[in-house]
Image (cartoon, rainbow, N blue to C red; front, side, top):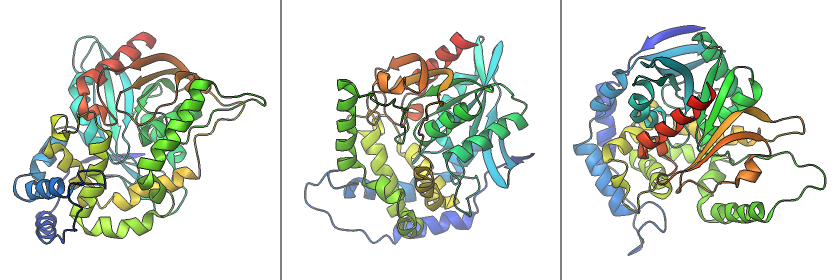
Length: 376
């Protein structure tokens, strides 16, 4: 495995092109008083794009990224971008943290100080960009799903000298981290999740039935998909059709991504109360400059072909912590999760949503740290 230092340096011409495209946006109309009920609110998106053009600084984002040690690792023909920060405490545990969609590795940067600094247990953090996201390479053929990426992560950790390590993930990262624990149980010492993959199917013995609580969850998830799941349906069936518009229009890309931040955060309807314009636009700009929206949404289709489905002899026996944030997407009851995961810690958090690492970094980091303090 070859590992090379990496610095982010987007060419100036690409920044100029972005601004020109934003200035020439052909805006749609909107129903009076629509708010967010029909999707991304027009006035909100216009204000955000105006800020993107006039006030946001990608160079500042670059500087923040480059303040950490970034690398590119070549593994099985893929180029994996990752940040590597070693803990400063008396004992450091290797921990690979994996993001999801429509997030990126940028989400995790606010947690880095809370996880690497201090006098007690800290972490040697490995924060990769999922294959097809950010500065990692884009698959050129089908078959690169969450299970495949889990094997790449394992080889990356071994290449860094970590034979025993922890894993943390939310959204797509929860699926990758779960596969990592399932496929490499002798190496993963602990699994911390803040999301249960939507494809999760536990093994059910013949004659087994769902509890009342589990049946209620099944109805909740069906209702949620009927109201909120259209994005997932197209991304897991016809992602390429969507890709043309979103790869060509920065305003369109921003609208597609920001609607999820608005819907899935614990903000009381005031998104900027938990995530600033600069943080939102750093993430959208990353997708824009790396042209990774098309490849990132294709992962939905690839992973749909390989769901996290447990057989009779499959179970994650590694100690597992699950942290439920109140504004997270519908979450299975503990009894349903415990059918396949060795849950040793289950925490109901007081605040936070789907993007917990950026919404509540200190609270989230403390929960991760508390879990690993119990098992190492």
